[in-house]
Length: 462
RNA sequence: GCACCGGUGCCCGAGUGGACCAAGGGAACGGCCUGCAAAGCCGUAAAGCCGCGGGUUCAAAUCCCGCCCGGUGCUCCA
Image (cartoon, rainbow, N blue to C red):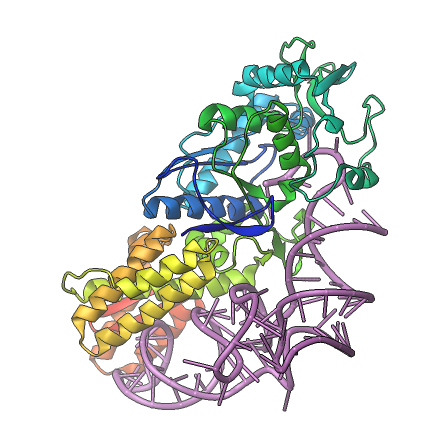
């Protein structure tokens, strides 16, 4: 039985989908106003693994993740650049998708944009106004928090408690009847993009797009709603209020991932150049980032930095070598070792315990190597198949062929390096080890590592 | 300030009441292999007891109280 920690109750609960065998998942995608960062990667990776594992288990999954392409930050960025909102949004959406592709993240089945859903949002807002859950002011339409008893349930606070902290960080809008009330529709200001509505020209308020999209594409009472845990309040609390305010059932389970830290501190642009994904993925194998993320439970705050990425890279190299070794061994056909897959499922079923799942995989790797050393090919094959099946279920491709380093022939210096390698081989053949070592040292200073194997010498960049 | 979540070896991190009390990865060390290395495999040691101080319990890293530190949220940040 699959279990998740549901943010609404904070407890681990059995997962019972709306429809047997089918799972509907919605997770909050990015607001495309800037380059994607580590946090986007971690969050998207978390839900990628969730979806992959559910599919691996045999569920028919429908996944939806939005692109928020209209918001204050996009407007500001466009103004700063002397560009337009659609241009800014389109550019960063492209970058986002590119980086997700590098991370081998499966595309969501549907990736709707907020601007394509304005009509549906207007419908939802209209419904709320009709039901008396929302009111209109000069500056827009606001949700009346007092009308919903359950407001605050997701974040685990009462309306009174929330009211105490309201305005702690942002000035209170005088137009609102209650500081907690939040915008559903913002009246247009001069120069801003706007759409027509029964309340005059304006633009969508608090992430009402997520409600309009998720309910439209997945239906009422869909299964899982996810996102980063910084979105719990007010973002998700408000979404929930919007849906419940329309008397519609919303997410059955709320799943939130933890934040990323760099060097023990919050990630910020001043802290390092690899807080953006593009730079990081240029430096490290994207699979190393996936492995690193999976080594920490998705709900926990985690550390990402050059040290941990290097460590993950070392672990990844080991997995690649393992996959290659097993492939070269030409092992017999074998069914994946059931004990390993059972262990893997047991770990994953328990709130997606990827760290434990990886421990099962690494144990299988060691056992398979041991079996191969002992020339127990049947066991080695069964264990290797299980390990490969499990890594694949996590979206982790292993083996040198999967390495982003690509084939050695692609390296611009390949011809020159190969020449040096051949000269060294000749020297070794003549037992001129001094010359052989000199060439090896020369390559080492250029960051090239040589490996002499039974079938010849290979090289790679360290 | 208020709320929530964390603080586990040299590093990253599982474990959240009980088989001598800590998985897995990285690093370290030793062995095999190698002309020597590298890589790989095998193995070993390493937490004077899991932030600090109290408490509950037959039994706690795991529960309770206080304190210290970090993170997140408190109107648009994954």
